[in-house]
Image (cartoon, rainbow, N blue to C red):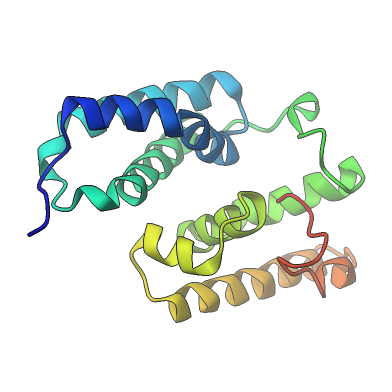
Length: 178
C-alpha cells in the first residue's frame, strides 16, 4: 500500500536535502537569483499546503520539481526579463555571444521542449530520471529533445548563424551548459 501525503518531518528533510536542487531548477528558468529564491519559497509553500494531495510519497522529488518548474515559468512569463550578462554562469564553456544566442534559442522552444533541454543539458539528469520527473515515457522525452535540437538549429539557421557547433552536442560530450 502506498503512503498518502507527507509528514512534517518528511517535508523538513526534503527541504533541507533538496533546496539547492530546487533553486537550480528555478534559476535555470529565471536566471535571476532573487526570483529563483522567490520561486523556490513559493513552491515549498505550495508543496506544504498541498502535501496531502501527494498520493505516493516516493514521488515527492518529481512532484516538487514540477511545481518548482511551473512556478518559475509562471514568474518568467510575468517578468519577461532579459538575462544580464553578469549573471551568465562562470562555467559556460563558450564565448558569451554564443551563450546568449543559445539561450535565446532555448527560450523560444515550447515549454515542454525547454523543460527537457534544461533538465538534460543544463541540470545533467539522465533521460530516465527526467521521464519520471515529467511523468512521461522515455521515448517521448527523447522525441522532445530531438525536436528541441532541430528547432534550435532552424532558429540559428534562420537568423544567419552557423548551427554547426550544436550538430554533435550530446550529453556524453562536453555539451554547453544550456
